Length: 412
Image (cartoon, rainbow, N blue to C red; front, side, top):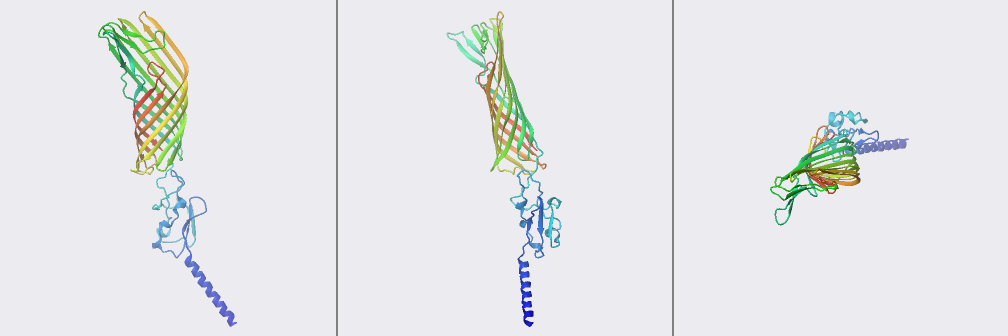
């Protein structure tokens, strides 16, 4: 009996020592719950001391936003009633609750948390003033032949084209992953003129050639004869496209493509006198076509500011390229009038294809508002080439539009 009592006493002592050792080694970290998203669990222990509590012990990685642009999770903060907040524990048990119900506290300094995340409303829009000067394979308005000397001297009188302002507008929808559907419109118009007066006899002016039986008109022959020539141009494009934003390290890119409708019309008028008799030439041609357009844009932040952080700004280098292939119909008409009067008319219509290449290089400043909307201002050099657009009086040849642009846009 005495032996059995002694053995029981030893067993009881071993159990007490084991229980104290296990309790001393128990750790109760703040850990994410396996329950639904947005719920975490706080385990409690009386062994914790308040002054030793460190927010960095929270497993912030488990609650990092799933996307750099959007997140349904609020900033991680300790709930009211936590040891750090009130000095009281949750009764030695475990606490479960939605994160949205907690009072917001200080941000936990963790590189996986993104303070600047926001949810887009889905609107993207922009407008630009584009300053362009047209250029052709030849800018000739008419030719002058001086036959007063021993040999004929021919010179070219050119149209003095200058810079014109053209509008460019885009409007569309964009989702939180950067997929966008937009409509874009651009239009350019210009006109120019040139004239000359014969100072003596045997000075002639030849208008640009046409497809009529006359082939164009000539003026001059005696002093006082003259020629006046003018040209006009109107072109526009309408795009409906899809694009996707993609980021590669510090490069922010956009790629897309879609449908394009384009039209370009040009006209040429020349009139004057030939030995006092009236002559005139009126020429016009137009192309209307449809096709595909593809494009890409790259932005490289300079690192001066943080981009996509609410209430901040950024400065980036930008470059973009766009190409479209078009198929359509071209129509041509010409009327020449010589002294007599003798009229000659020509009209043609045929299928035609042309291409348009566009390049832009410049700088862009982004301003991220507290609402999450991104507003940008862009200054850039622009180059546009219409290959096969022709010139004032001809369907053949290329047209270039070179200059710069100031753009204002919003991504909200």
